[in-house]
Length: 232
Image 1 (cartoon, rainbow, N blue to C red):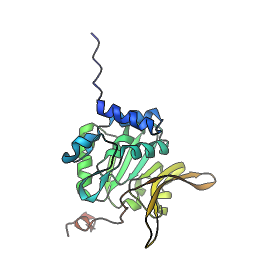
Image 2 (image 1 turned 90 degrees about the horizontal axis):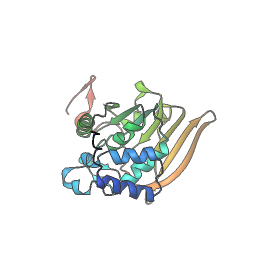
Image 3 (image 1 turned 60 degrees about the horizontal axis):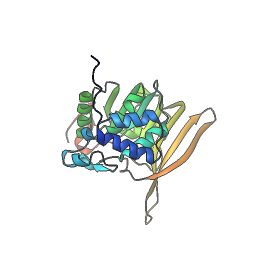
Image 4 (image 1 turned 45 degrees about the vertical axis):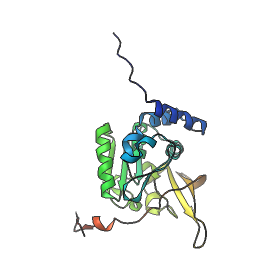
């Protein structure tokens, strides 16, 4: 007797249908979005809204991105199955989980230890064994594991750090929310796509977005001293 096919979550199916209507066309990305249980990555009070196409708050003053933006960034990365992807800003772990089935390995960096611990627990529960994580300053990337075929920033920067561009492999793509607007001006952000090829670096401005800002260094309560994490 043939085994029954696993039940598909109707909420996830509805979300994917909405993403298709918004222009997400990559079938691999849509499948990853459907199979990644967003409910596992949101705070309990917001569980009823887990599959809505909206931003939701998480711990440490951060957010879990709107599914459309996650899908759009993932599609823009053009991820292949043999690629190594670096994510800056693990947050709840949702974006890394979506990337996991699309590539060979995901490297993700988070500055907030409580967020990282929560994300690691979710990766373990979901069996995402090709996701490796690090507690550190995301603006420095992960030089020990560079170069990366793809890099994604999950928080906004005024300018993409050279340290991250230097960790991009030839032929690589980097996607980042880039903010502009000085004092007295409204701050706008646009996703920016950076491509590194034999001719150098080229940039494409994509869609307007709104992300929390990328902050350098580690929070005060988790500074490193003498090579060991210390509470201060």
